[in-house]
Image 1: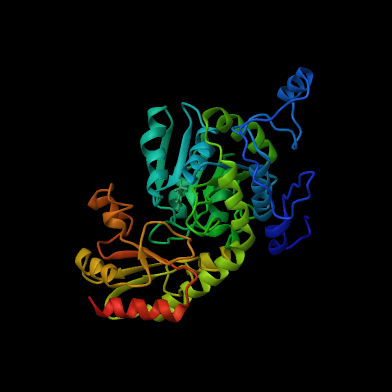
Image 2: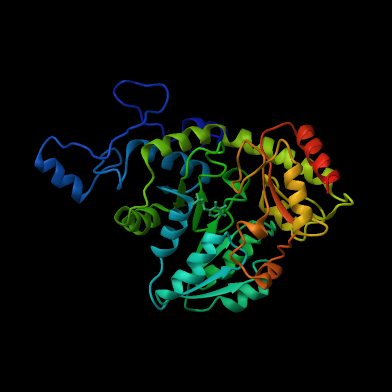
Length: 392
Ligand SMILES: *Cc1c(COP(=O)(O)O)cnc(C)c1O
């Protein structure tokens, strides 16, 4: 399997068949597992092999198939699946820090990640320093001898800033800090986070892995030591495990993820290129546009620019709302990575909690809208966007 290309791993890696030889992966919709004897139960609680299960909060065959498949695709030894992307972020962070530790994080984070790092960790005596993720000197100044963890989103929401992971990981590893990457926007398809220095890669499977708007889920990828000795004990006892049904949806989602992401990214690039310079737009933000401030880093670090494009509409909230109200194909929703194209206005939704100053510091203007490009025809999407821009 090691030699298989990602397309083959996406379809076959991790498959476990029952005695019935089912072709498609089975959903093991069970909370518990039976033992033949009390001796067997005792032995399994001491040490269980990968095909021995105890209780679905600890592990389940369908969940295990999903974990093994995503680990094979990500290039890590192991993975632990969680009930949501935030359960994954929470597990990756809390399993690795204790009171008195120091963490350095980029400031441009998904809102709930920022809440964990900014509001919850300090309550438990963990000190967190935030930096502008694109400023390597700032990382260097912030990472100390006692820094335990570095946390970053390689491509930040919603301004799509790109952080030089290799450079940050080098600085972190020089101080023996663990590098945790929330890699949703880079996608498992276009990123090489582990090769570039990430120790732990976290995904909200809700996004591109499902990719069809059905289930919440998440996953933490890392070494066997990290996943089974640090992450699993924390998550299996605190209850963040993924349900077997949702694991099955994610497992089947992985089979088509590369095809979907490649098609969506190709359309995203086409939309970004076609709209750049439009008189109603102040900026078009997309990592693979030459005008993007970190275009060089993006091209070095990722195989494509991703499936999200942000548009900065001249004017502000009124103009942005007029665009959203005039769209016919593209729906208003704050999800992303879906086969349906979606649009959101961060200032009034996902980033409403921030102050005006915080939003300004992150480059989130009142006219900014975030487009998640789906699987529709690119020309149809462009026609929808041109029509809506005309309505402003
Ligand atoms: C969506 C998202 C999350 C949270 O995932 P859920 O599945 O909604 O819990 C975390 N980080 C990033 C970057 C995301 O886009």
